[in-house]
Image 1 (cartoon, rainbow, N blue to C red):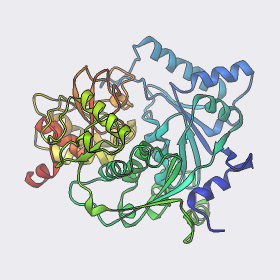
Image 2: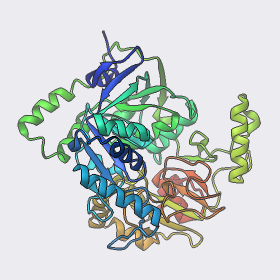
Image 3: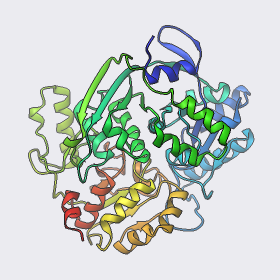
Length: 471
């Protein structure tokens, strides 16, 4: 029987089928952070259970860590410091690798795991964080799990898993000037809605996807969860395989040949059936900006803010009306030109070296607007060092950006990087929910290129204008 890539990955990791919809799924790698793991470890201790496979766990401190540009970081907030301390104690007790606060390899979990060669095609990767879908860029099935499930994985290395349906999204053509993978996924989400992939594992396919770099594919898969997807996958090609082999020195020559042969089978069969299919043309994509409080409330930068009255669905209309009340915007007005007070470039969506290169190319020789506080938070210590070696950090600082230490930072404001009430931020993150970046703060999602343009001009700007005029 013809199978999809998703079905192949689930079947290859199924320990036993529990019923028509549920299987006991084996996990190749389980990743933890400081805020979703404490209850899980407490449950293990209460039941006097060990971690069954410590070598297939990894932990990192990333959500609550301060990102001030100091050599030695100290978590000053007592509850946050306790979370980090407890994670260190639990990892030490159970012999789990931890990338702690001042580890030179510390960074955002979904950035460091691929860059350290931990993610390989064909794996199942679990983490107590919804953006674990990022790993689909390398042909691995990754998805987020809840705290009780974290405990179950620690104790058994398995998960009771309800299987998803299959969705394929085909994108052909080439992205035009100024458009990026971030704009592509924002376009897709705005078209299919924030619930459009609910209950589905999404496989991306097409010439536009093949043309994307591996890091751009990570951005695409990372934000697919914002359409409600339970997974995101791209069949591993030569780009993905080379990316893994360059970062996984444990895969020696003989093993590499065997691995490559195995990974070549990781694709959907030609006649595999998908419950839902969507087709998009990459040439239609423009730079996107969110206007509301959900990632699907977004429009091209040269468009106007939609009028809620045009929505035929009453729930959609009510959500749009509430979003406009929260953001203080007017229906029918242009999205371009809206003033911002903050610019944040970072997060597990857009804090890799490729993203920072794009920003540096746009801001070089220019200055951040006096009305804007702009910060760049690299996704990992490795990204930070590479950016400094390439001169990117010097360009950013010369332009007036704050050059910070790695961490989740203002993506979700669980640290001391946050918006003040009423502040409006051009952000490269993945969510623009009410209060996500700070109480009563207002988030406009966009690509790193668009955020760079907003930093320079002081308002939401079509980056294509800056790129066209920059000499």
